[in-house]
Image (cartoon, rainbow, N blue to C red):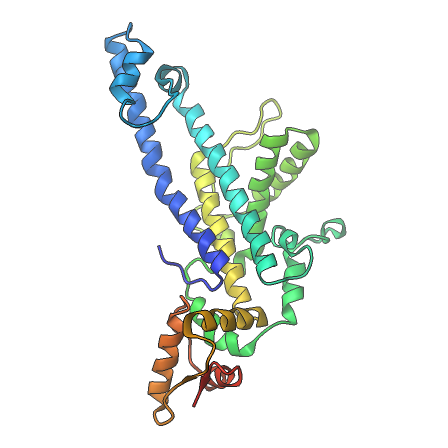
Length: 318
């Protein structure tokens, strides 16, 4: 799946999330089928040894240490789904955290930006220290009308672009992040944060998230540790993807995008200004589009302001 994104770190994270989507359901199906086959064989031959099972199902795969009786008979399918969900939850949380840190460093954004990108806005003064509101406030002074009209407007057709749902998507992220923290740390403080975030998340609808379905969650019971839904965690992966896409495209309309564009242009097209048609405005636009595509970007809306900016930056001349 090719998504319209601007910054290279965003493209890398989006690719990784997409790879996970492609991996999840075929793998879960394969585990289900393995369980069915092992259980069927053991049902017919109750005395079969673990070594014989490995010879039947594992030999030739290069996998070592598999205990098929424990995995396919002693462990329930529900438990295995939850284990799978846990791996995915940790991965999705890590991917979004990584993107927040890399994009902040890559663009030399203000200190603590990576934290602001992980929290929705709040009316609670004690929670305003870290919030997306801070990030939007910081980038407000770096808006680029030229890139907003030429680059950002093209990227905005990305179906994952969700500027009207950013607060709700971050509330969803906070719930799953606190779920992950609670599973790792198990402290009373982590549990309290999870309870707070579950109360917030439980009130959100799919429409408020901009999704066809709200990522499923299993309400916390005071008598048990948090329980995961595999389908819900996969849905959370979609939320992570939407957050990355939305914030990437927001930044594509800023001066940070201008600096990125110049750097990538010189790598792709050389440091010397490139001549474009001086006689035919349409040919000039086509030529600029071709040169821009070499940066791994979709063709921009080539306004006169954009062409003049390229000329002023000595990337082209006409």
